[in-house]
Length: 255
Ligand code: NI
Image (tube, rainbow, N blue to C red; front, side, top):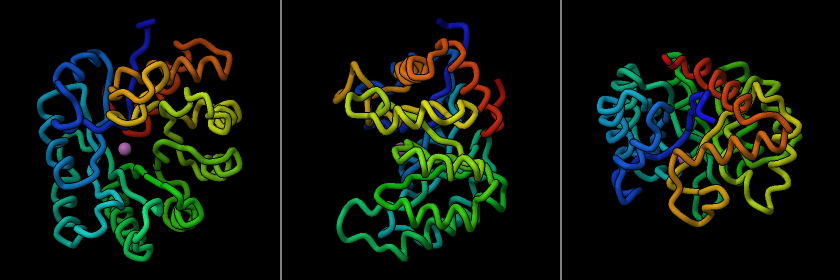
């Protein structure tokens, strides 16, 4: 181990997410994190983090759960910071129909406006999709076919994974792949070429085995890499080498 750098392509590094955020970040020395924005608080915190730590990059964006507070001033704030140093994408943005009371049309409008912003400035689009596969696919087909895009925390079928990767969409694989009931995601990892996969943790959520249920942290991306190596019957170094290259190329990161 330790020959190759690890990149956690999607984590949340909010001050309130961890007992001691500095320790969590320190644990990723020599590795890279991409802190995902979800709301105005995390977007602002991310812009501070990238200044403070050389190995942190950020995406900024409004998660579909922010649909009730999202407005044109959020969009102009995002536009005013999209070219800030180390802002590498817009996200996480998308559709979430999991909880009752969601407004599909408003979520779609918010998603598409942020996609158009990303495209205007040539930034990667990082997508959150929950219980909304068909609508997400429709929007990807219309706006993002062939555009640098990540489906974060991919949890869909092999069939949808093929449709996405044919459009050039990258799949973020997280700790769920280590869960005992993850047969569908294991199948996805087995079937899909490593050139389409990225490692992520979605920390502080979704800690991999053997830490399931605990607070997740970016360093645990190693356990995702180990599981992918096991599924594909290749070395962990190879998984890290290829997924790190994938992430550097997609997000245009300096190493
Ligand atoms: Ni996330």
